[in-house]
Image (cartoon, rainbow, N blue to C red):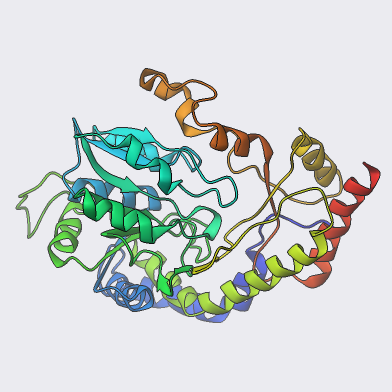
Length: 370
């Protein structure tokens, strides 16, 4: 059977009754922008993340952008982050006029290499953005210690990691501010774009609430220059329904990941790693195929009807828009190697064991032929 990389049809069929009820309720209310449905979801998300404040915004990208704006990061500032991530992480740094400074990754976890951060610090460094890539938390303890010692803000890019934990703390609650995405491929998928910012800092939360409505604190009064970063009420209503299922969905993802690991342990590829004190949410199940075989595996799986995706084929520091930063191939070798070797396989809560067996059989067929 064909197996897609992700399939939301079964999830939405299972939730059809509460989703349709939510649609009807929001439609009847006439309240489509912010309002009670957004406020309800914000309270639920804050409770889930064990923080004081959650602010719904228009996307995960806008969550990062508004967090940087709220921290007054701008021209002349530098922000340290990873080159192995979706472009938005660095793009938002550039959009506020600051300079992204890329530090290489740990090859085994794909997370920011804490040991290399200190060497990248300058007087202009104002923040660190670790990315909890694929659902695995970055090494937040040492990152926070380094940030505190150097008076830096920590913005968690937790777009792929809602439901993950570090030292039993939910991601998003560990740094100064956490940013989430509810894009349809994420663990709690909206029916379109959506995002959120979480924090324990009341002043920062108030500022973010202002910035998401053009910088207004009341009526047509604008103490700040912000943007249109609002979360739609219909998306908030959908997310409220889905958030209740997140823990069960994460547990199912972890079951699938464990099963993959056991069935792949004798193959010549590297499976995901979960270090001590880190609880992986497996938004993606990403393997590593060395020896230049990644594309051959990908083409074989495509021929078998198995969905795959390469997250990410080019490191951010070598993107054309960043030529002015003067990075060259070989500057960040671990990230560059990962881009050549990673491949994400199907994983989603509604995936059956029979579907997973199809994926396993196709992967094993490739390596057997080799």
